[in-house]
Length: 157
Image (cartoon, rainbow, N blue to C red; front, side, top):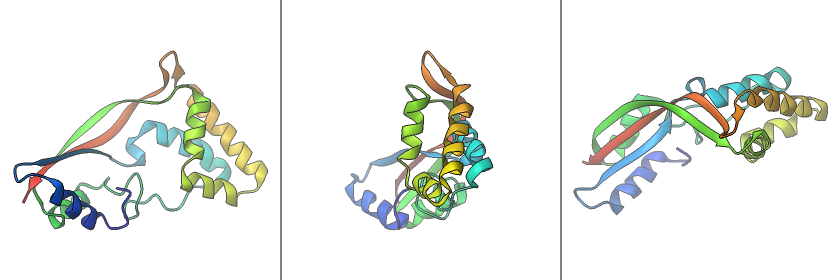
């Protein structure tokens, strides 16, 4: 999902498999199906707006969120018998809120969004994200419950 040319990437992966090999991966279903992302994005958006560069047609965490795109990309990449199963599960995002904030701030789209905002807006956005995620913090870390992903399986064509 992070490749500039996902078809070429999957073609390359296909060359590494044995003839009976199969491909299995998880792909996030999109921001609206990932509780921790929605909590953080909604909190930050009040101060700095929504980031560019995380759409389903761009390299990034949601590039394979559309089932039709997954099928098309894998078929063009040399795969068949493609199956998608929805998986909804808790995700432990980090040890604590500060850990999650460091993770979010390591992402290029978050860095760009905050860098382009006035400093007081960037600080307010970070504080809002901390507050939003604190409701998910507990002894097991920062855990959100409703996170949707596609479990994708395919075989060489």
